[in-house]
Amino acid sequence: MTSIDLSSSNPARIRASAVVIGVLKKDETIKIAPGSTPVGAAYGRTLVRALTSLGATGDAGQVTRIPKAGSVASPVVIAVGLGETVPASEGLRRAAGSAVRAAAGMESVALALPAITEDELRAVLEGALFGAYAFSTYRKKSAKAHKAPVKAVTVATPLAKDKDAAAAVSEVKALTKSLHLVRDLINTAPSDLAPADFADTAVSACRTLKLDVEVLDETALAKGKYGGLIGVGMGSVNPPRLVRIAYRHPHAQRHIAFVGKGITFDSGGISIKPAANMDAMKSDMSGAAAVLGAMTAIARLKPEVNVTGYLALAENMPSGSAQRPSDVIAIRGGRTVEVLNTDAEGRLVLADAIVRAGEDKPDTIVDIATLTGAAVVALGTRTSGIMSNDDEFRTHVHEVATSVGEQMWPMMLPPELRASMDSKVADIANIGDRWGGMLVAGLFLKDFVPDGVTWAHLDIAGPAFNEGEPFGYTPKGGTGAAMRTLVALATQAADAEPGEDQPPA
Image (cartoon, rainbow, N blue to C red):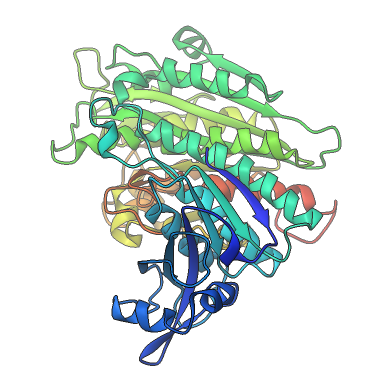
């Protein structure tokens, strides 16, 4: 992982491979942003003119490089656009991420971006480390053709010697380590990440973090009557797993459970998907990866809350032993499901895990999944949907996600759509109305939430896997979507006073 430290020195005098400055859009020209003015002064009066001549407009995320001049210690100046005004936290995260990505292949960069307040500093730290990522596991002979992330980042800030700033650095490092684990898992080839492999990775990741881990194999799943996991995994030579990860704090007042969909590859089963873009279905385990990442981050941050994570892992493949359309399965707890479409498999494994999570008696259950293509149709590729059985908690999740820079949007669960899943032979069918398919899937899961438990469902089908170009601190491929929201939900639940008037968690 890229190293990062703070400095109160004049950024123009920090020796690095490049120094990053922020520029603001101003009328027909640009303006040097706060935090970057020492570099402008050292460069001389020509900096704005030079950047403008190279096409710099100050538009958010635009990156422009120029060679040093004047008494700037670094040989290269990288200017990143911030927009018309100094942006809020997410804008700074994206700017820092864009700049650090542009510096790939360099040994070091100094960031002279606005980092005057604690919120600004944390945003710059997060953007820098989140953006310094590359997945190179499978690059052998082509490795030299791809630039590695910058090795070291120094953030210039007047808060460099502040204790809270040092704590922020430690927290951001913990988040980054977990986020990169999530991205690595999503980017791993499915031939190397069968359910048993994923479970082994979870055990290894949790071993040194004092997390209790339990893995149920196919025999234990059959004995425990986990019909969703068994049914979805029937067609694969790689049997399913259910991983339970427990974090406990001696002073905890609340207990929250996270449940992640972990389909290590989704062919659709007998209801097979079209061949086009099926390669992206290695990312159908992004929800489980986010839960694992969140649990490891929580273990490092040690909030005063109890958290239990569930990874529902299966591979959905077509074969002579595969689950068939019209099969009837029994989810743990006994509710029966008529499987009308084997490509609506994520909700089946989640149902098993939600029921099991309820047996731990949490105050709140949050499940996370790349669940429906309908979510992408409704919300696009950068926004997740939030559904809940409690409007106040749904609002709370939205606010928490926004606070950490993750785009989510509250969605309703129209009760009239539930009737479309009425089965002629079982308690419920696994599909219903085509229109509003994201909401139908949410209503299906709601049926398996224990009475009295506050629940939210996050459909991350759009932002979990970026098939376009990198942007901000978001790479191509696995993004780690929603992991930071889960961590923030846990830490905010820990910070709330017992009996405080806030959504339960």
